[in-house]
Image (cartoon, rainbow, N blue to C red):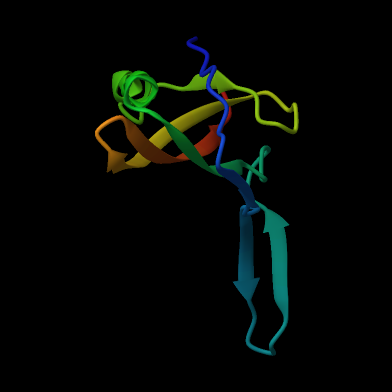
Length: 110
């Protein structure tokens, strides 16, 4: 499995959305249970502000996985995981500088 070795340098924000199944009963009562085994996948929104050469390398890594193939990455928290990136955006600041924003979603299994 490939390893994403770049560190975000502008901002990184973590979001957790636990997967829950719920059922609403007629009397207003609601029952909730976890949906599966790994119910709290992490989602990181990352920003890379780099020279164009580094941004080309980062984007090539993401394009090669095509939002399907998982890769290893260790965020600042030190909790290594398997991730997919199915969404990223580029902003050109100058001919030599670009910003790449990406969303890494944790996956479990292969």
